[in-house]
Image (cartoon, rainbow over all chains, first blue to last red; front, side, top):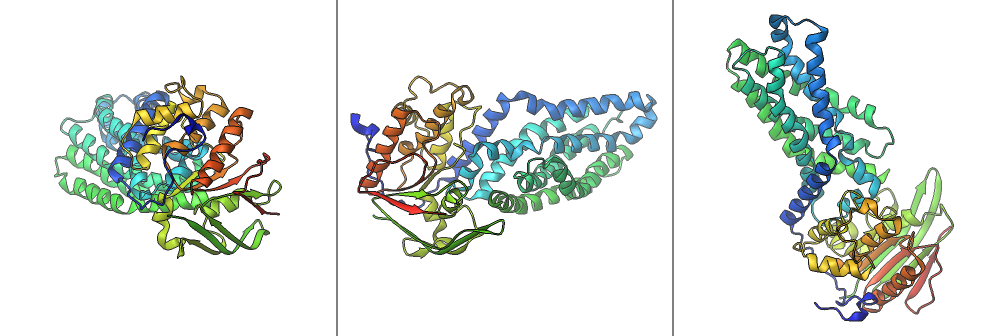
Amino acid sequence: MSQPETAKLAPGLKPHLKEPSENLSLALKATLKRDLVLMLRRRGEVLNPLVFFALVITLFPIGISPDPNLLATIAPGLLWVAALLAALLSLDSLFRSDYDDGSLEQLLLAPQPLPALALAKVAVHWLLTGLPLALMAPVLGIMLALPGGSYLVLAISLALGSAILSLIGAIGAALTVGLARGGVLLSLLVLPLYIPVLIFGAGAVQAAIAGDPVTAHLAILGALLAVALMLAPWAIAASLRISING
Amino acid sequence: MSLCLQARQLACERDERWLFKVLDVDIRSGEVVRIEGPNGSGKTTLLKILSGQLTDYHGELIWNGEAMRQVREHFLANLLYLGHSPGVKTGLSALENLAWYQALDGQKDNQAASWKALENVGLAGFEDVPAGQLSAGQQRRIALARLTLTPRILWVLDEPFTAIDRHGVATLEAQLVAHANNGGCVIVTTHHELSSSPALRRIQLG
């Protein structure tokens, strides 16, 4: 489709009505790539939750007591609560910049199904927040004298759990994206929904420490993730439409 | 081949104030429709309704003879909307920005086409510069590059002339008329005076 020099004025091709020929995988790949590149260029934002996580875990032994027995008792819950709050911290920016620069409107007007595109954005959030938190947790576990044998379970439970947190959190982020200061509201909205994840996540680590089987806990986390994967994308899409309407 | 976007008995209320009531709009191929009205008269709201973004309105939208709700996908595949905010990521270069829009349009990443489109809007030499380092007008030009890069028949443009220099305004104006003459259709709001053309039609609000 070579265009003549006058193409500045007249588009070379005659515009015509097109049948929707959405290429979903192409759009998903492009959205994943775009968000990954954007996040990696703003490293501060990616590092922020990780630094928060490390700081909280570092300060606890100093603030409470260096006694390994005491620390080992509170370690599973502490690691999970700190990771959960770190993930929550990063949620507000999930759709914020897209909303501000108009990309969100364009995302909503894309011929591709919005739930799928929203899921791509959540996947990037998990890859750059939840997964690093899960990988970091065992290292921080050493500082809390976490008993051996529970490190792998900690990482797995956090990897599964943080994916649920990202999915649920994205619903809240989508609902509050139109508000100037939606951060507090966002926390209030999603925290109650985080509690089951916290219970079963921390429970898995505690079971591992006690020597009990952990498969039940992890299976429930997996089931929660499956449900969240099925329902959350549609809820996120609906919430984004509500926010844009406002 | 031709398109037809109709609105019947359109009415929209904002903060207990009617922006417009009983508005009938017929928009067809070959037209440049300019929505006019003072600030706050609902021009942007009308554009958002016509582009299928808002749902809290009364009345009915008809796309090529069928209710918009039922043919939304078909409508979106033919719509190019440029809003107040240009939809350009400041952290990405012009080329990276356009690559995303190409993918949403279903095109394979085609840098040659993006280069050509950027050259057409006068951004030759700025292809790899992060958009955040460009001026407001240049950022808007990145968005305007989509007009040639991802050809759609219906253009809905909200204040496309904002921050564009005089020469760019003339070029863009000619581009709008050329699009209409080619069988396309443009709905536009602007405070800039468009030179009269047989394709131009006005809708007055407020």
